[in-house]
Structure formats: C-alpha cells, structure tokens
Length: 175
Image (tube, rainbow, N blue to C red; front, side, top):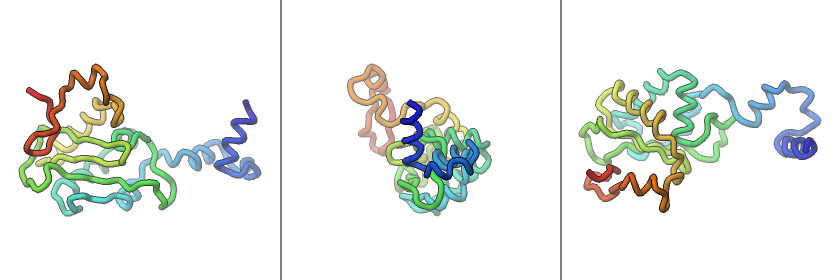
C-alpha cells in the first residue's frame, strides 16, 4: 500500500525532490494554497453581463470582508473545492452572471445560485453590500448540494417542485 501512495505522489512531484520539502510544502504543491488570493481569483473571473454591473463591486467587497474560512466556503459553494489552483494556468475561469438579465430592478429576496461543474455564480442584482453579504452567507451555509446531487427522481427533487419557466428567468418553487 505504501508503494501505491509513493507511486501516486511520484506522479505529481519528482520523488528525488521530496527530501527538500516539508509536509506543508508538499500539501501546497499538490492541493493549492490554503489562503484564498482574491486578486488571483479576480484575474481569473469572466463576467457574463460585464464587470461594470453595479452588483459586481458589491460581490468583491463582500469577499474582501470575508475571513479566509468564509472564502473557502465560498469556493466550495461555487466550485466544490476549497482551494484555488497554483499559478496562472487554471482549468476553468470563474464566471459571474448577474440576473435577471437586462433588469435594473433589485432582487434582494433571491439567493445566489452556483454551478460547481462550471465554476460559475448566478448573482441576483442586490441593492446593497449588506444584502449581498447576507444572501451569500445564507446560500453558502444552507445550500450544500453540489449541482446535480439532487437531480433525477430523488425525493428531495420531487419535494422542491422547481418551476424553471418563470417570466423573469428565476428559479422559484411553486406556491
């Protein structure tokens, strides 16, 4: 079993360099840095509705105010991971979609929606930093399913009874 572990680690890092590293160095090189670098995340972010949208700066202000623990929770919410990749070559760019599209009206009651498989966030057009902060924390803390975890014929999906055909494009439960 130890040989299998050694073989696996050797596929990531040259084994003859292992004696130069601490376990923390090895962990960082294989898993990424524990601290979330927001400047790096910003460099790897695309905006479906333009970065000039009024809610986009609110998102970044909220993320800057978050502790590292909350930032890791945010990453888990939007990507299913708790660490950013090292370096500048990322497998996927973070994408922010403001919704409802084309609306200037605030949508303070809605929660953000994440798509972990696509590393994207559907962000409602919140009216303030406080509301953005509150709704994001709520979603990060209470919306723990990762994308398709509750799809298909599961009881949880049937109980939600989502209606995806609302006029404004939001996903709201039937009333």
